[in-house]
Image 1 (spheres, rainbow, N blue to C red):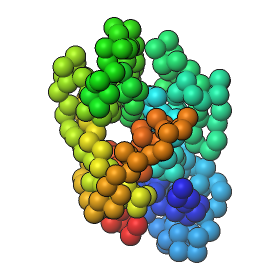
Image 2 (cartoon, one colour):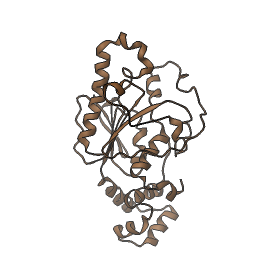
Image 3 (tube, rainbow, N blue to C red):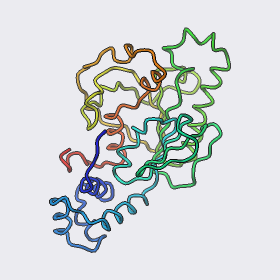
Image 4 (cartoon, rainbow, N blue to C red):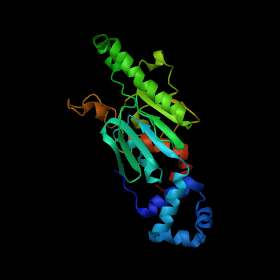
Length: 271
């Protein structure tokens, strides 16, 4: 996991709020000089009051909601920038549990109602067990119940995405959604984004599809070589195998953040 220092979080938040030339407008907002902000950053000594003020300013931009998200990988760049993030999955412990800017919620999304917020973006990762074409040989054994259950979970995501009135994305591998809903708007492999921060271990292939809406911006690819060509296929049987296969690649998560809020942050921070 990538851990940001307080000064780094301050920089990221400044970039989120004001873009590449963030120091002067942030200094005016905080009632200090640009030189003071530069000194805080260069010395790695940002006062707590300034960090708290910037965090409140970022939160005013809206919350982040991620559905069927157990790992919280997708929201970590947003949380590091100061956004309030909610990750909902039936595998989380019952109730709400907050750690930093990330709140995990144990709930069945088909019957769950999101907290009333202004949302900056909504993500959905409905389980693909009953929809992915890689498991087509088991469709008949699962029967209509399996198909219906899978489609109901996707529909729950779609409904909440529309309700959020924000940019949104629903992810699934190559699946029957192309027939039962519509063709995906975008496809990728994890290795396509391995060059982004956090993507060092994403050098593998797994064709993944995105359905998007609400003004969602597609990410810029930074591919790396396929270092682990059979990673997905060679995962040993275990109770966590399904979760490991569906874990959100961290390079991809960072690329999505950059595309939708980053505003040239990587070049400005030198990360």
